Length: 223
Picture 1 (tube, rainbow, N blue to C red):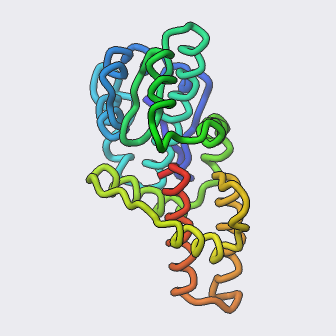
Picture 2: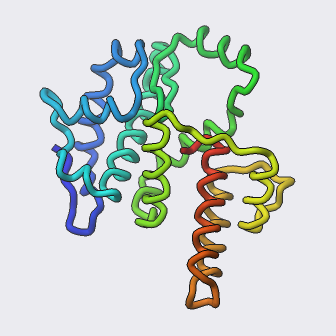
């Protein structure tokens, strides 16, 4: 059982990570059929795994920690299966699926709106660094959780190019650069501090900044 500390962060050991990764590896047939994150978490809460507690997952910050740790181990597993030549594990909140290498790359070539490989690697880098979990604030988590449940309910929001440009302008991001998770998060945190009421901002200013951040996260396929 993965334990949680009083400071609302997981007490993580190498043994915990290895246990979760090994447990995920036994679910290869499940991944071959595809499964969403919500269903996978429920599976890992139940016997014989019993890796997470229901009561703990009612807390937004702990739910985010669970999501982060799960994705951390999924990306670890993806690396293992790549080396072993088993296939390519595609990892998204709405679908986690194991495909053969040939099938995966063929689908990427055929999809008109296929994700940029650099963006995918940036996500892997983000989740493989456990420091990113501990530096995420409750405010960040509430934003992420809100959009997570919208996606699970089947209501993803697609932003227009005008909306994206407006959000970038609001967060002081140069629209000429390629948006990455690191860039968006950096500008969001800086802008959020500048619109704080103590800095002369308002609640409405704060809400606008958060809304812009959420929109850009959706655009780069983090949410």
